[in-house]
Length: 475
Image (cartoon, rainbow, N blue to C red; front, side):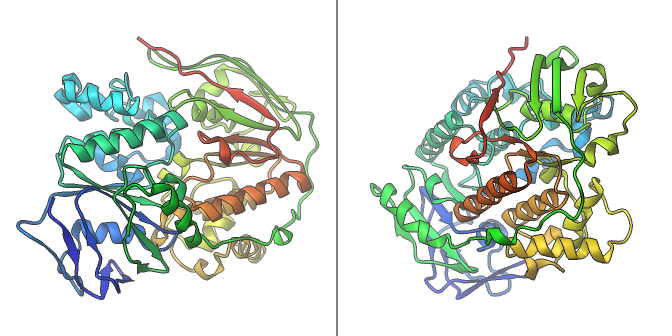
């Protein structure tokens, strides 16, 4: 790839304007664009992908324009060639007949040595027969990367690639990025956490407040550059302003108990003979590698999986199937996950998204009351999002959307908090702040907590128990 020179003072794309005072260039090799949530990183990547010489954008390179591919989490829809209508659909076998498997998407590629090499790089072996919407968030990201590599781009831009990757996969991903660059494909990583800057990085471009900073040479100096980029992360919350619940809690002894639970789709086993007792007020981490079934297990608890009713499950001292409705269950649970974020396509305002969390639904059902709107604003204010209250949710950056969904989860003041990778897409400072909010809520309100993460430093200090799932071997 030849050097890409961004020559104009301002860069524009779909209503967003970036300042480019240094007229930065994207060199061949591995480039990292780093900045906090909302700083304009994804817009910068999109401009490089397809914003050439439109509006004020003056972008040049010697020779022909390079082939550029952009990967983000939502690309599951274009990858599969179909549109999954709602995130619970992945748990409903009869609703997935037309959703393709990985082998059907990738075709003959899955029989090649190149496929096996890519899968080995990213620990994705054996994924060929899974339906695409059954992939874990980490597996999905790996598949998207492999799919793009088959198209042999000159520049591969990846937005927040470490989201959903366990510790081992992060190491393998770094090795894969280095190998991809050595093969002649340049790579740009859009990151919001300086600690994720890989050692193979050549250039770091900082961003803040929709401004493209001066590039920094990272070769042989990655540790120092990681440290210096921490100054970009300036964010904190006032823990004394965490809203209190206006509603009384219903007492219970056992929050959940699973006894010998099993989940399978066809001949593929996802959960096998799993038992788990969680008492009221306990704080658990749910651990396991990508594809071990953590989100599937939680779908049994949250009543999103029809197979819950063929298993022996107790929730809030009541056996599943003893007369409670799905909404009785959901009313007492606050739940956020990468899959919920992926399929959350609510077109309303940010205020409405948070306020609707009081209703235990994912759609827009009726007008928002004044009291609900005021509660929503209190949570938005806590996370410094009040200026976005009237914006459409779909116009926010990925990190801003995640903070909104976290506020939507907390507004219920639930008896059970299920936080499945809640810090996905948040920058380092926002991660620290959300962790502090979780710790404070647990100390003050004593909810039961189940916390899922692939990255141990993200586990809140309030967690005192751990359940670990193993990835099952399937034929």
